[in-house]
Length: 388
Figure 1 (cartoon, rainbow, N blue to C red):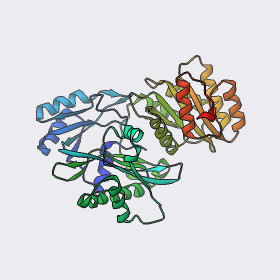
Figure 2 (tube, rainbow, N blue to C red; figure 1 turned 180 degrees about the vertical axis):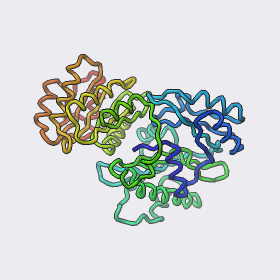
Figure 3 (tube, rainbow, N blue to C red; figure 1 turned 60 degrees about the vertical axis):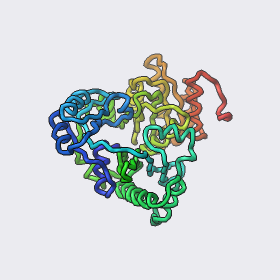
Figure 4 (cartoon, rainbow, N blue to C red; figure 1 turned 30 degrees about the vertical axis):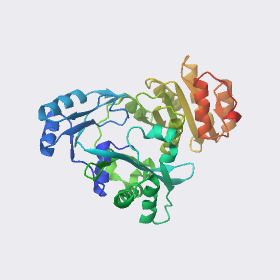
């Protein structure tokens, strides 16, 4: 379950992670009232799940009440990646001296949470991971062991921080670890974690993704009233899958069995320099018809060029999923390219269907191999999987 930014910041604040003064507005008058209460220049940030808000004109600044109202009018009601903007986070502007990165996420390949920190945060973190991966310092957490402060300080020191700043950053990271464990998160991220002109630390943005399988322990998230006017999310609910829009400029769709595998696949897409447009979590008990409808839904994602289907046939059946893809392809021609990584129950039968439809299939390789194969397919290149 993805939380909106305002929800994630509320959780972070409850754990003592500093955030800027803010308030949630659903109309221009409410935005004006929040600005007047804050009494300083503000940022107005559309509360939507998909990324790319800044480029879409959904994050604006204002330094007087009239401009706040005008900005709210410009943002509210706009549609972004199929999602309508119903609310705005009105937040005090921060005097930024440096943007830092701090994140904890599940590494499903290793089976452990991994902490990641960097002296460079903000919108370029994905490109940094590609061009200078050594600038993102990583350390795995053992859920069975206490997280010692000196280990966290060591992480920040390795990243390049010194002195008092290391201690202050360690305190923030320790609180983020608590958030991660106590909310049953898959990802808890601050990007950027801002160091202000006067040396304070503030979480300028917040991402929190809760494990769907643990939501029964977190009624505080389930009880939040959510207005959904996203045509993709609405259709996903009707067919009992989960659709999450990611990057409005993305070209690759991800269909996976479980939020964790979806996240790992998304990271692999970024790792080749591509952008994920959306992912669909199939959940369990997928039928042939639901698989076909899932593909029809993904195919409507704007700018989509290719789809990676990354599934294990445990609860879901490989033959059933392959037949659903075959039914989708039988509906008529499509320009979308597919690569399937599929193993599990009735895998040979499923592979046979995919071979009949000439769908490139990764039978025993990794997710990284499947993503690289999709890149070659999109480029019209024929390549042996052994070369990947």
